[in-house]
Length: 512
Ligand code: KIV
Ligand code: ZN
Image (cartoon, rainbow, N blue to C red):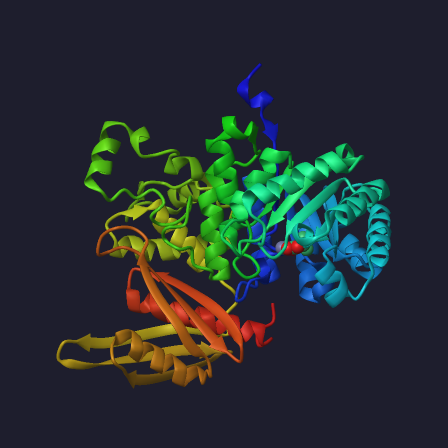
């Protein structure tokens, strides 16, 4: 018997587009959600939770679009244990190849008493009714006992048993507030398996939040105890401190498959691209030391480590960067590469773009290839994310000219197009970026405050692509913007404008 056959296959339920999108500043429009969902399908995630359809018209439309367009994965919609929520979710996922309705109600005393103002009996009744209503639309119904890890064990087991009897095929055990500890959470799953008589009729799922930094550890402990599905998000984004990170759960199971006696169906080579895409689209920057996808995850600094690696990579590497789709600065194209070669490279890298998008990306590639001697896969990745995965713009950068040096006051002249009208201005500043930002602030008359500004080089060398990330706040709303260019001042201007465009979108200033 092959090794693969004897490993338990753990289902990966991705909730980047629902719980992930709930984190401050990470909201996506429906086209962006579709782009991410397509990448999740390439990753082979078993279930994509595409949104919470009753939450807003935009959410409904996003789930509907994904259900229509994305094949391969089950498409799920979230619903509270209420008829109108379930019907809305059912409508949104109805055109999916395979659909799931995920309904939930809280089972902890604090949530029932203070939030729901419902008795145990009322919660039990609502849970059963919700599963039965959902089953009228699909056989694939998931029930979540929100705040399960802080619920009374006997009551939790009663609700689970009743939900399975009503037709739930998956029972999700959330650690909603990230309170559980790994040994304790594993024990909770074991107890559910021992105490719920019909538990063999359902898959046990876990959904862990990261408030104590234990979301991945708790999820893995649950897998050891018998959970068959893990809910997670790309880069671990989500409410507050986030959710269990998909890439960490998947690579732990892959790297230590023998220990867990488990594996997933994930195409790990698509992980890095998914991480970059989610980071660019949401503006949620990945910390450099983040496991699996951080910039330093495979960087070896110490001499002893480098020496060991040269002798045998396995001395300091428990998995390869290639296994998660990180290319190690592969030179791909140059100044003389034509559109055909560029198009082939894009499809080799897994991008499926329309002809119009290819043309747009190719024009930018030509400009970059003129400036840079060598163009790497990472540069192409940056070009595509910068040119294609961008929200429609209220503020379009037309020109920028900056004067700066040791003996001159930095000044920036910027020309923007705003709703078809060109506006030009000039300002001085403490440095070239400050001058640029002052000019943009004057032209756009923005009331937002700059909370942070970060710059990083995508490839090595002074001609590298620089990627700038800014965080802005206005009226309690936080947004993040990113921009990439070989000129760091241009990248800075783009990042600022990207954030301002996100603010405009959130205020409803741009129609999609
Ligand atoms: O954290 C949580 O409890 C949730 C549920 C809706 C599954 O997100
Ligand atoms: Zn959650």
